[in-house]
Amino acid sequence: MKNQNQFTPKAFVIRYWDRVIKNNLPKPSFILSKASPLSAADASSFANYASANTLSTKLPEFCSAANLLCSLDINPQSYRKGVDLDKKLSFASYGITHPFEDYIRKGLLFPIYTKSSSNNSITSLGKNSFRSGMFFREKMLQQGMVMHMPNIRDKLPERSFLPRSILIKLPFASSKLDEMKQFFKVSKNSSMEKMIVNSLRECERVPSKGEVKRCVGSLEDMIDFATSILGSNVTVRSTENVNGSNKNVMLSQVRGINHGKVKEFVSCHQTMFPYLLYYCHSVPKVRVYEADLLDPQSKVKINRGVAICHLDTTAWSPTHGAFVALGSGPGRIEVCHWIFENDLIWTIAD
Image (cartoon, rainbow, N blue to C red; front, side, top):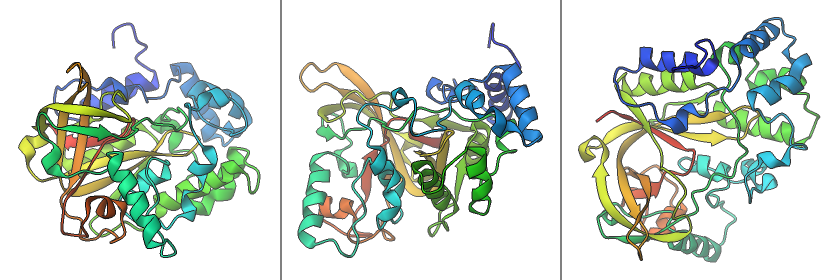
């Protein structure tokens, strides 16, 4: 933190990391880059406004300085190329069930099929997902294997976490929806209202069997949740970049995290909200792998992918696209997939 103001939210979260996480592993830049960009002076000033319940009077300044998404009608540059906002806001209309609803919510996977879906449409979508490399078997994670990587690019708007000192002073609950709408100056039946309602619904959803879940809007909260599940000797991983998306890749070195043992992990996925909000949940009975990914022709390394294999699929829907794609059913096979850009998985440190 040389030459960095020690009182910025980012400097604080680095110290918090050092205090809570008990190892000397490097802090991944991809996670620290999501910390609040507020200056020390701005963070203190906005926290005071929040304490006085007057921060909404400074909303334009706050949103700009904190890198928030406070309107869906301005600043179109904040959206990554190819984002379909209507699609992002319509996930609640799908018959979504755990697991993978977090990817569906972001438009990265096709929806879990509803009862009204025809068998033909289910089969078609499933086979397409298999061809795209969305799902695969654990035995495919071996050196020399050539496989198609799906489009792992994150198309959600770029936002930053809030400092916990401000976050704890803002309303976040369905019971406080009117306060939230007033704070963010949200109109009735607007896209912003739909976005907030959908995120609250998912965050307040009853956990699936065996699942522990929490939505976090600060990096401190994410650290607390991960360490509450896994202990203090943890690290966080993600696929290194988006190279290889929608292309064939060749697997080189493949390494099982935690020596390939079946463990519990914490997986975190972005959800649409004015500030950076992650849906984090415990993922039991999985194996996690890292693999160097090569261009199949040149054999040059282009990426380092992180893949997760779900070993217990007994609670999954029989019509889940993974089973259609891979030709099986709940509890009969494991299902693997890559960790997408800006999604995260916390593991016990090796």
